[in-house]
Image (tube, rainbow, N blue to C red; front, side, top):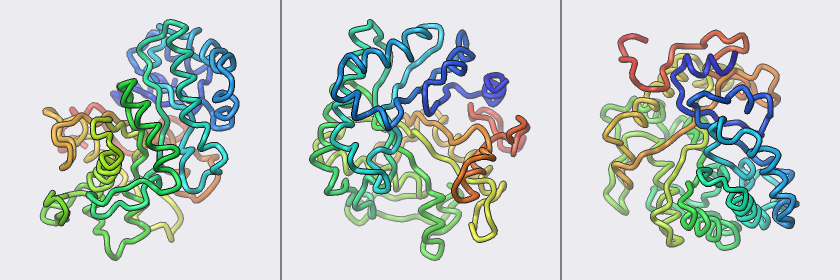
Length: 317
């Protein structure tokens, strides 16, 4: 049922936070490209043991390949976040290398290996040209990771949430600027002269500049998560259906428009993306906004109209 709902939203790809066999089976013989994930708690063991890595790929990729179009394999989720335990950091890139080796040795060629990073991998992000990775990560984790991504022609998978940046500082960040709605409001980077019309571009370019600073200007960014909550507690300002629909529709329009728009620092670059999330996760713990990122209610009905292909004219929503 979920697969037909995903198709009805005109999605081209879908991201799983594990490698659930029932879901991978349901995605067989569809045209949906699939991203699967090695759980965070397996990273340390996989990094130390090639046969364990081989077994994970044998169990979670081989039985579904090629009928399920597994195209991305993420090793962990936000492992390098400042809120994540840092004991896993040294093992992240070695685990990515092992998984890539397993895929190759099992004859699976079309899968890009990466890991998703939260925006807090940055120590400095404003103006974007000051973008720099955190000192605790830069040399030990980010440099070898970028070297791996560059060598394997993979992506830097990035989670970008203008909602959280805006809601943390609503007095200084304009809501329309966060929603891609600012017609006249711009921010100019004094270091480069680049002009920004929305917060999303600003955040992404800070990562481009950080990668550039480490000597890897050519690694492409893939938006591993973005979105806007459609509800939340009364004190969680800006979390409502109108803003969620506005942000997601404008975001879709930006990343599906051809020729590719890119960002001020990388005009014309494609930004492949995942929108978070398919469902309002009504059993998810944490702040109430966490239960309200979905395009659909748990019963499958739409929270608001959206077309992930970007082909429905604005007037029809």
